[in-house]
Length: 420
Image 1: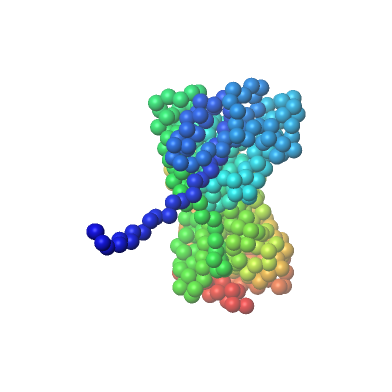
Image 2: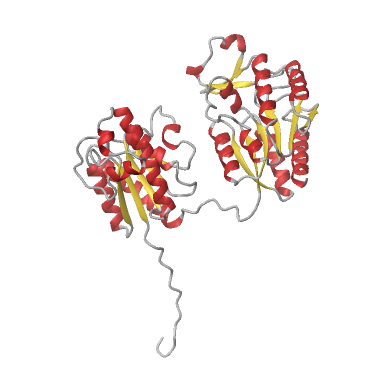
């Protein structure tokens, strides 16, 4: 309108992001060129990082493989003389150091990897060094079929997209897949990328799984209502590992560890569906944080059909779903795990309490049900009484783990630990 000043808000333009594109320049040069072109057209900057170990490199990366290897303390001449396996190991170590450095120096705001098995494993190792919240994505040939996610994502928030076809030149299929992958990483760098920030609040971790879920959630809800900030971890392998890491990083300042099922996989030699969380309970003991422990779920192994034990029928089991069994542990195995719990908790320098539900350690543990083992639990009580150091509070409850009253008890005891 003439003669009248009009004030309009001008949206702030987000600074251009630099996205690391990690791939083998000796075999994936067509795809690298395609991806980097899309990144540039979006107004962002690609930073190509060569992770190749082959003899000839048709394209020059922004960060050459020689520079990558130097970050790990190697020269190309050394790696070129190695066998394939050792060369890949050296590159994995080196790209991990390089990505960590690029992130720490603020030179990249996102990371995109792509390729087959070798590229995916190398990129995954490197991306796991990046903080949770840092945008990271791998477009992989192995992100489909009967593969396990552990190979690609490990214990970090790595986004994964299947490549559908192999990486052997650009074609109408991988064009659209790679375009979407680039769009996803640009979206994350533009609208995400926030790191973990507890904003000065103290957080209490808890562990749960299907057979302990209702009790843990009830206890957590009670604590939340009392002003306690809670973070839950799924205790089937990766959850416990991540929790232990976050305790050491200072993100977690107390723990209500009610689901120790991952210790069964560790006891069996890192075997079964819940494998991967080794040395559970150690971080809280090391850091001396308030800890409440219940040995929920240590009486069975979670096994897939191809993992069933030779004495499966003698042990007894139930099907959790069509792909997983809950296979009973023998009494001596449960008691061995109980002794390990006591031994690890005895290392603690902080306030620690153990509660044993005498009525059962999980669902289906009532009279007449498959996991009803009152005599075993009485022997667990004796072990805790005899082997826990006197500074650790030990209590028993006549209730089952799944009784709502037991959840209330756990909430009350955890809250009391936090007030001391």
